[in-house]
Length: 462
Image (cartoon, rainbow, N blue to C red; front, side, top):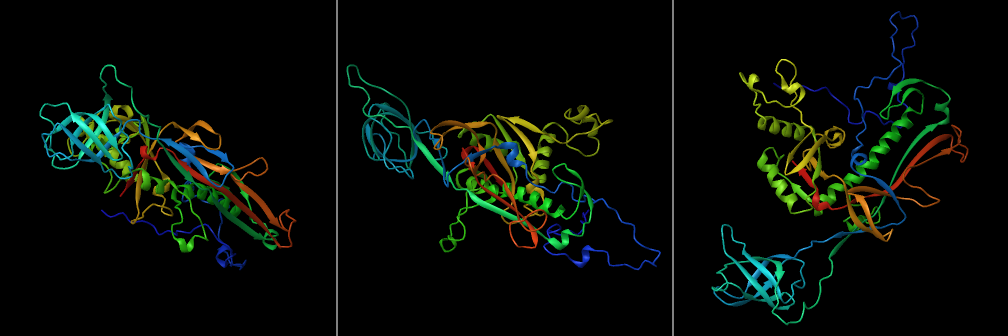
């Protein structure tokens, strides 16, 4: 059965001019059929704001620089996955060559012991060896096994598991320095404006409204100013999610861009593509990936409606409820009133545990038809965000600091706070700082999103 939807306008609110359609034009007072009018505005779209995501998972803190930098810890242990051997098999010693991308020198020292494993699918070939020499990307090893090196046919993986030294010998030669990865981001300036002429301010029209931030009462011409503010507050969040750096050198003078959440996750996060994960096997793959990263115990899934329902269906099926005729008596005992078939059935879940705790929440931004809802190209169905905070070295503070995985840095000093600036210009509405016969309300913010530990996030793409 098809679901017919009503027509809608993708731009129902903004208007820069007074239109004839805004006013009653029937002034025939001899007409006995004058219309009855409602003074209260009907909220047919409910809460139209899409912001709240960053308020739920992050924080805001000041910054006084054009560039925000932080360091993230590298791996503690050493492993190379693209290593070749000079020996064809059976040799007591061999020279291993590291070919991993980005590696300029092997971080292995004489006396350390390594595990060698074949990369060929289905292979069981392994070796244990002790390092006898290191030069750049080459490692000389001596095998523990009597049979010498196994007959590897391609690349192998090696990792260090310890060290061994003979009696009366010198200690370890050289030392290893901690490896940090340095990331940075630049704030962008976001602006908006609302203007109303002095003449329009002289004719007051009242409308009773209930607004998205919980306020209610009567507003006149400043109702549009209030909606401009709400729209701007949404942009403060969505700009942090969608921003990308300016990679087009021809347009570099127009804008520098910034690294938004989706851009960072595409660049150095985990990306699940090809449809929503809807089975335990799918989530097992995600858990296996998270095991290789920070292993954060609690994670929050921010999802569109379809993905949320897919998880509900998966969990309901696992619980024993499969629907269909004759199954109601055997429905699973989860949810409201133990899902008593004579009382109520709750097929919605707020979370589950599979290796880690996963809590889910609907993300309105992904559902809203005027934003990402209904997109085909570049569609995102959800984001997995680790809960809690992480320790990083803050370049501004000059020390380690606890920071939420997601947080916003806005420009501020003792004399200038650019978190959310508002000011009025013109010669109407109480303003008297220019000869413009209007009142203009200006909005400005300068901010950047810091995504710490992007390797612990998962971006779900349809």
